[in-house]
Image (cartoon, rainbow, N blue to C red; front, top):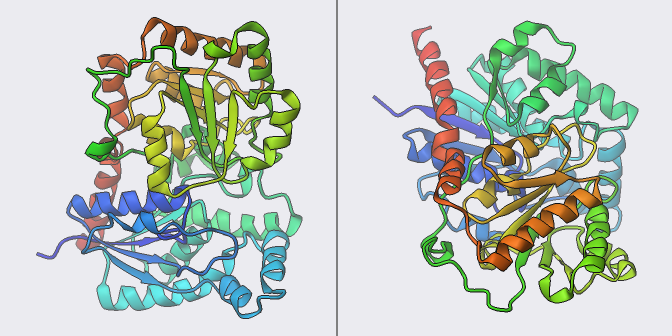
Length: 426
């Protein structure tokens, strides 16, 4: 018998940079290792605004098939370089459900050809680029194949899409995706509750809460837990690896907390905090005005492999969640950080998915809108560093292992097997 086949649909896939691209690569590789034959339907390297990261291609399985078709808005921008990009972005942010939505047409066309020639058992679409789930919906309607719609983030109900036309058109697609998918996967219960609010209870029968997972690190990035770093007089090094989003997720409260911390402790006791990512350096003026540049250093984004190297060289990891979001998001960087086995500090809302998971694995968190709470958590880490408690305990490291991709994705494998089995019986 031939192996089971999954057609994985994702607008984001290497060499496109970004969290969803990395997650899709990781999940495709995992499914391939688990005995499924995976084929990926994705875009080309043409993009309106997303950068590329060739390092994400390095460890793709050699037998993973990837089929690419250009997204029309990116092709249009490339054809008319003087005005095409600005026009396409304006249309995408004001008239379309999202910038990348025109991809639904060529992706559906290519998807139908792949289904006809390759005959997959299951369709699996992944979003934060929600056009991926829209393509999954169209393929489901035409072919009747079992379909799993995965929401790394909510769509219209996330609160990020505020234009009236966006909300009307996006809501049309979102309702049909939720109604017609054979299974709905969310990474947090908070996100599922937000998206399904007001919908019939029967929808919950198809909901699966499956968080992000992490892969084991290559040997050159692993620190021996039996030989923690000897600090001497060195300051603790913390790192935040992830994008800031102006007016949505930024370091303003962190800056205020560091300013207060400097008033209470000598510089030699304070951590060195490096923030690396998109839209990070635009906050340099705030850092300078607060006089905290000797503690908080801002850096532009780097390639994925270089970012992992810098995290491996740090002593602790800082996670900034999106304040005021109702705790619905699960930042990719949080679960990725578990692989490094380092002390963590999350800045998040109470009752958020981030705070809940950090409590579960006995790591620190503070209210992202409360500078005094952030000060207290930073002081706790500083005291641990001063005492020489610079690594996690064996029990803490064991708790992090719950989020290894082979463990968190076990229910996903069962789901695919059940859907593929139901089709074969029909």
